[in-house]
Length: 220
Image (cartoon, rainbow, N blue to C red; front, top):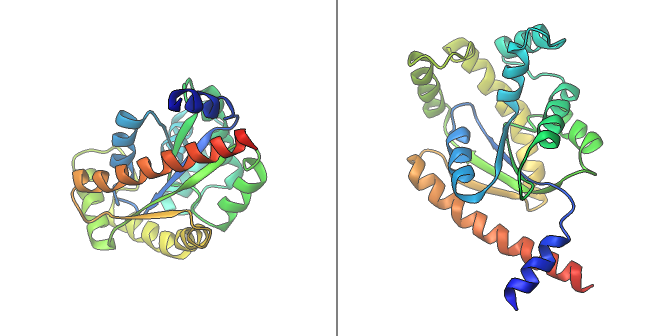
């Protein structure tokens, strides 16, 4: 009976499900996403990685503009970011249509752009907020840079700008989603295993929540 209901519920899913993953630079978003992908079948879409890939593409019309924003710790125009995210979802071979979007939306412009360009095409499950101090985040990023991350923004000057931008622009977005009851907060000061243990509990809760919503939608 349960398996039949689950099959019926899954058959009603017609939009990609998205979880935003937010936190300061170096909070551990990428590590959390890697673990979720391996165990829960999500596709990881990092706004930052997509922008860096586009920047590195010699044929991209946006390459120089993206490089300027990344180097200065400022935010790339939302039209570009949404376009890259949409393209990545459209070309994905995800069997269950579940996506983690890392590092987006970062500011009010991002949020408005997302709502205008994407809100009718996807369902936002929630926001995984990895909370971590500036000191810890900076130490992690500098260590990453020293090991040869290849990222031009893994230096102290850029990191200070990025953290200031995060506090000023991204925290209000997290608070916006918190008021909607969509934010799940995790202590990023912990080791990665402990953080993921907490995240996994939330994912199980979300899975059952979505399952029951789909059942109700089917019955009604």
